[in-house]
Image (cartoon, rainbow, N blue to C red; front, side):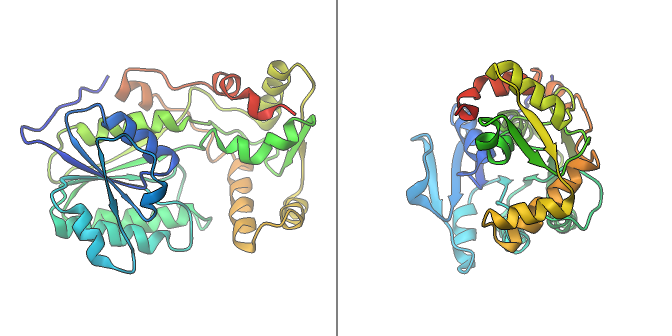
Length: 294
């Protein structure tokens, strides 16, 4: 287990993306630590965070709000949802953090090689910008979030089948709560001013979509099968479902990544850093099985 070493000075940790899946879990964890936490959000009225977390409203078209929110913070967790504005927004946060005197930035990125596929290409661009800044940095590169199965499969699984273009590709899903636990460790560690690190975060093993269907079948008590589509058929299905061209391209890129087992890597990093094994896919499905019932 990686020992959490606290700096002698009180820490103020800013979380950009505090209403997201990882950010909100991280805020709840840090709320029990002896640090001040400020959550940066564009939608302060929607924030559901612990009462001792300060909420700061920010607007990317008003750069002063970024520096005001970051003033006094010495550490920043950086996460923004996938969108055409992600690169510009995260770079603006990085630059504002450096200007405000933040000493350590922990960026939530994505596992995988150099790629043209979105959002992986966006993360590469942001990582490159961060690497050139005079600030300590830690990159968290998780594999696929396990809760994406809800969006991809919930309604279909309840009817006995689900479909995609992942073929026989393998993917190692990770629980967002485990990512948040690693982010907490990274933010609380004392690091050197020139430190530049990257952690690859995964669950305990990889799975094919057919194997995942077998887990659904076991836990639901009825047969669930995965129907493989060609990329062309998947594009037609996504378009017919009413997704925007942007989301169709994003989903097709993800299908390619899954089909090519880009996210099939298995690491021991979560357990080494937190002292606890990452949650398994069957455990997560069992915990959330109600979402996959008719």
